[in-house]
Length: 213
Image 1 (tube, rainbow, N blue to C red):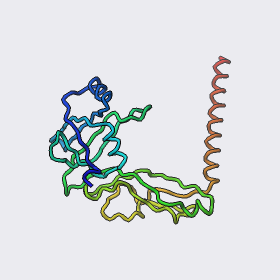
Image 2: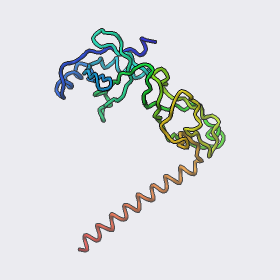
Image 3: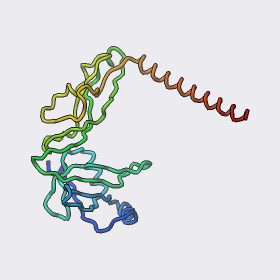
């Protein structure tokens, strides 16, 4: 298990856009490790190692800086290039065993709803991520939710989730996923198209008024 969530890093002395750009050219990614207000360590890691780690989506990361003892931490933020989607920077937050923390966990829907199979309904995901409070040892890589029993018009809300070790930072009534009839999607699309047409007519009217002046 240790190998699956291990990340080897080197402490870096340089800061700023110039050194960071040079680092990326060498297939290194700049980042930072922090622990409360006591510690703040600039890091660099191998880009391939970081991609591999993120693909496995570990809840906890064992960070090894300059061959020292591993530090348990969680990934708090990833900054990506908006065009190439490459990782530009990352933030790791150190944790303390036995102390709860707030994290964001992705939702993973399992199965095909009966309303989709037999009724031609459409499955909608309203909350792709959930904010939770829990102990470090209880952080899930994802929240798996079985949606096979959902019929057209039915849904799963936050209050229906059975994770006693987790505290959800959402209203119990908040919908995570639901199945809607195809007509609802069609109506929404038609309404959107109609709104765009009206907006276009409004702009033409404004142009005409300007020309009249």
